[in-house]
Length: 307
Image (cartoon, rainbow, N blue to C red; front, side, top):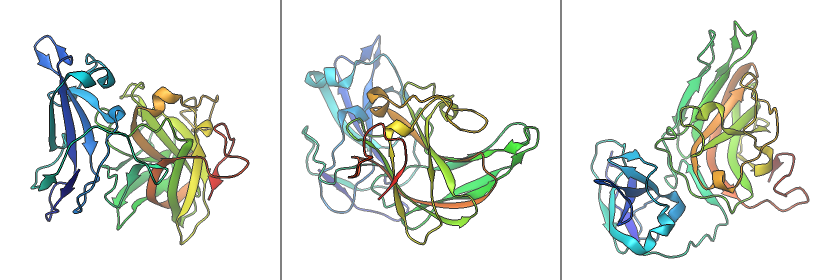
């Protein structure tokens, strides 16, 4: 239970840290670390699931620590620190209590990325880098939403459209909550300009080689009409696959994510791929959610649903 007294230009990202007697490797002491980014100036409870913790040593992820849930009877130290890697700045955090307990999820969803301070992430954009790719894009945080804008152009040597992609922190440092109990992802999005209206959303998990994440992610398509209002797009897990063409992004086989992948998401990605033209896509939130009501809300539903 904590609050953050905001300071101009101050830090807003922190880590919860746990050490246990069993997380040792020779002379190295592992530290289980999880992001804490939803603090406000109101004293409130903030829940961090065990699945959000990753074991580190001197700031780098390591694989030799036991699963944290096997270490809960051997906790030797708890702490709160500023996010690493992070930036320099001032901060003021007040802690009333630190306790173990059950999640209370009255809203029925799990925020993965927002632009209102509840689930912030460091977004950036990349473009087709090979064979003379000429696409361009940018990602800018606005007041309460992110703007992904640019142009998707022909790759001269392929004579086919390239891609532009907006993505969160690199997988080696990315952390997201366990969403295995949810039915899919809900995107709060709108097309604010350009002729491109078809996009792809993707995510990586900790089992994917972090240096191959961009091309081995679980990917799904969605289509939007230009609108002044944000729309909610629901993507059930069944429309995602990590089997897709590196040239078009289209699925080559259906292989939806399993629970292990949904417990260990490390990066979120928004794509324009295989289409020519300009785009301006606004993103308000990305969250895991139960299936919306209706006859097509099963886990293996074959389409995209607007609510």
